[in-house]
Image 1 (cartoon, one colour):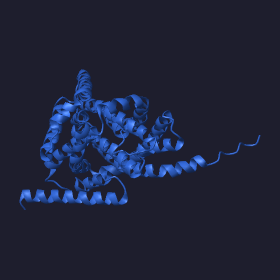
Image 2 (image 1 turned 90 degrees about the horizontal axis):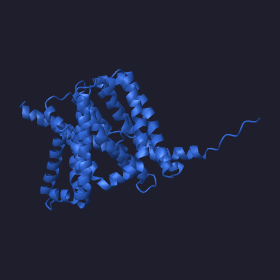
Image 3 (image 1 turned 90 degrees about the vertical axis):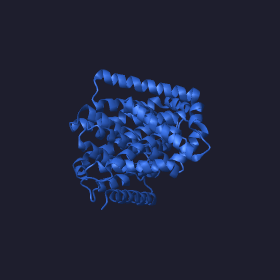
Image 4 (image 1 turned 60 degrees about the horizontal axis):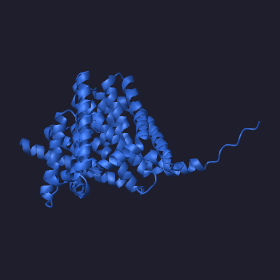
Amino acid sequence: MDHTALELIELGAVFFGLGLLGRLANRIGLSPIPLYLIGGLAFGSGGVLPLGDIGDFTTLAGEVGVVLLLLLLGLEYSAAELITGLKRSWTSGILDAVLNAAPGVAVALILGWGAVGAMVLGGVTYISSSGIVAKVLSDLGRLGNRETPVVLSILVFEDLVMALYLPILTALLVGVTFFGGLEAVGISVAVIAVVLLVALRYGRYVSAIVDSSDREVFLLKVLGAALLVAGIASALQVSAAVGAFLLGIAISGSTAENATKLLEPLRDLFAAIFFVVFGLNTDPRAIPPVLGWAIVLVVSTTLTKLVTGWWAARQAGIGNLGRARAGAALVARGEFSIVIAGLGLTYAAVPDELSALATAYVLLMAVVGPIAARVIEPVARTVLRRPAAAPAPT
């Protein structure tokens, strides 16, 4: 068969399969991320039906998916909202980082994956899935709840941490020297500061540059700007994802709203390819040996997110039920965890077992998170109404 014809057939099969998986996810009320990962495992090396002719396209499309994921995440925030959220949640954010990165770091060190592996896995277990959290809060009708601003503030803090963490991680993965790492950190901090300053004072001009009344022109300008900024950021070792996120922050007002509506279908398409590509690069035969460690991480980091949300909501003066809901809302892991693990694979700086562990962990957490958010309230009501045990007779 003609090579181009085979590529088109395989690509069409992948897209159609993703559509079926997405429909199944909607039917059962879960995020499609774990199903996309399973699809990638099925079509990758060691899978049921390995694909070998569309690697170049899917790899580039996956990179575009990361850029669009982070661009639309940035479009959700203004610079002022980011700064306000940072001021409001910095103590909770620090607690969140320490509690939830620690299990990943500990497991990586126990398995002998070294400092770089520990930093990668710590990031995987730390960051909640903003996409899954937002969808769950919307589906459960909790966007107007008192604890929701607390949850969103923690997510904002995590996103800002990622803007610093990803350039540092990239520098370590590339293998730069200590001073090279300091330079990468300095560049990333300077870029973030400049972008926030530009967004606060001149955001309307950035919005005006990319805005257009013509949908086709608007799409080309926004997408082109995102890829340009992401490429330049990557060249500076600031991370393409962070560059796209910062561009999203700089675009504000009605321009940001219109860009979100226009780019959402593209984001969903390319993001789905990104998750499939990660699955393609993971040998499913490597998952069973690390499944036990994945379960350990699932249990420990579910508990640490519950503690994080409870403590943050308590600091905001919210009652016990709201504290429980805040903790459960933060449990899900997803797109960012895979982005971090994918960076490690890209630079071949971590063992293949780490990608298998990250895949199993995200598969489980993308399922456990929405379930925890749904069941936490009735469970908490039952526990909180349970009468205290009578004191023992003296």
